[in-house]
Length: 446
Image (cartoon, one colour):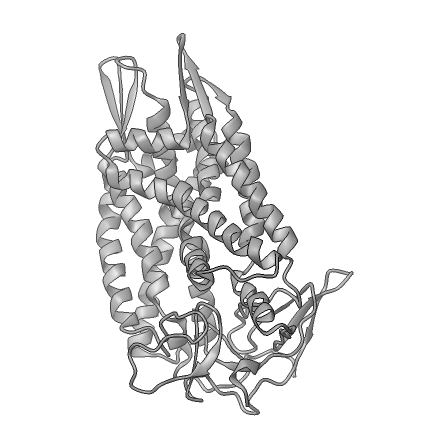
């Protein structure tokens, strides 16, 4: 059997044949229920994705050039741009926090848009650009770290927090960021792995069929129908058991060279591993570091406010209490969930994964797989407080009248967010299924 006719689930390593998938259809693994990456119908909508990328890039430039919020009080005016917030943190001796904000809200989204555009335009013209594989690797690597939508929620919370102190005027940058958030949400639903099919079609000068197992089809009635197709091989085999390895970058299944520690993908040149080396050990180290940083993140002040000789420190829980006592209960709940519940949830789930991988590898695999996907989904939203601090520091700088500076708690909290995200990326979800019999998940249709 040709390896190009196979696909391996990126979460449980199960092998499938590639049955035909039409436009508007998706596919999921019949064992772990994860989405099979690299599919978005039979054709890649290059025109729509390209146009949306250009529009997002233009909107991004507008959002960076104009103020997001303007503050007026006692005849004094202050305005904040995202770059201004980064500069305020940098000059306030919070350079690590400034770098976090710069990368997550400016640098990484910009690189993703430029890399996509660099790849899409030549593909639309029927050509494959130089460094094609490198650009797609860059897009896939930095995509989880772009947090424009989290920044937008931080803007909303900052506005509500400031409206009782001064007159808050939304700037053009706020509306540009709102539009950019929607555009990036649509682009985020686009899996760049499908561009490999367009690249292969151009290289081979013949269409490449995209075929999958267990297709979800959205009908006119908007109900999901499942069409079960037999996976390949005839019995449920994993790629590792069959002596194969699937590339995490482009999805290509190829023969694994036993004993090789530097095998690279024959298509995109990414490093290949049947399992991430030292996955549990690295995850344990990162979780331990995040747990050590979590306590000072909640106890130390994240902001320090000084006004007319009066100073006040603000902690994360203090911010939650402020919104609650002010009557803004929905925002209090949002901040509490994003800043307190989510970090604790991530640490608890990652600890559970580590203990289960070491002590009971075959315990509740489907539930653990769902928990892993939950951690990867909600991990970025903990960055909310860091963005609120950045905007507040940039807005409130009225000399001796009122000044807000970032506190050490912001650095500790940012470290918790980054370390837990790194830990979830280091953990290999295929370890969950290594000691589980290769059989379909319960409830799947034959």
